[in-house]
Length: 436
View 1: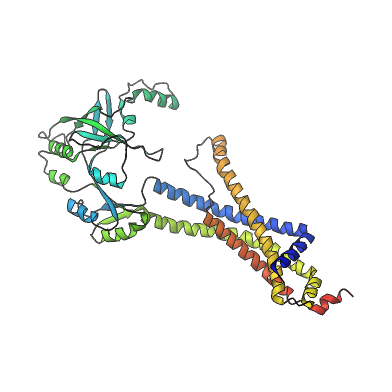
View 2: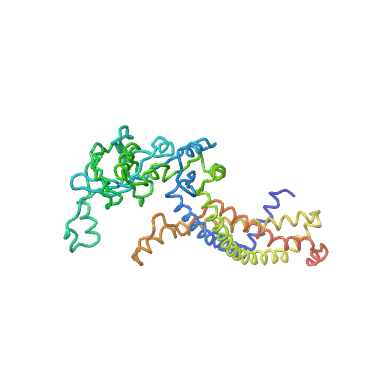
């Protein structure tokens, strides 16, 4: 018996009991959709958590720390020689952080950085260039937005929060900082130290960093040359006994690999150098384990709905075998083997499952899209709260679709297996005797 003949036979039988078959398909559709939607909530929470971690960190980045002391140039050179290391960035914090230009002032983090390695690691300029001379600096993208005048006492008096934010814009520096000369104020580390000097140094802004990809990220850091940092430290700590500890080693060292796949191997090599490592990969490993268990639990609960739907398939196929015992007897009489009969009934249950899985998947995607679109609007309208950026309640990756389809089709075929096996045991004489 050819496949097209089996298909024609199954199709005609399904049309004969159209209402019962479609009700069974509806149950399968709801079960499949429920499984996908329930699990999609877990996948959405997982995706949100991972995106939150990755939004401010790079997957190929490894933070390096030393248990005692700071990382030295000698150790940095060893790090650079490790296989698959693309760049080793190193920064030294500067204990002076105030810049002024006329009435405008900002206090921010100031570092001296090895700019060639920063560029290799992905640092980019929005405009301008890198420092070439001692008193040239590069500032973060939002430096000018935080470069403001001091507000009078009554400046915000009687204004709402929105009006205050709008009024605040009047205090912000509005000109382009490229080429501007700022005054860099150096404040003694210990004001009681009479030997420490107060000093102001003129610095020229020659570059502005690229805008961060995340809207919430505010970057106002200033990067000065190593020569200028030495001058600052020598000025502030000229008579300080701890001067040497400030000059030796780096406060912030990060290793960047060629790709995320090399992070684990490179981290193992670094740890053998008695250095401590931390990377997103290690954090995500624990995070992924937790969410894998969470998603597995949701899929298990959703699978119960599929099992309930399978009872309908089992009932439908059992009734089909009972009603078609005469047809089965005729097929056996003309030479149909038990294997052929079993395949016919398994094919019918498979068709019911395919329809249920197909419609259930489409329904799940439609509900997922609708929920993600409507829920933020509902929250904003009725709760007067603005949802977090990139908020999603449901996320259906292709892997979830594959898992759901596999479970649903597996349960469907198992539900049809017993009735199909029963069909092969129908006695030919008893089946045909009904015609007498």
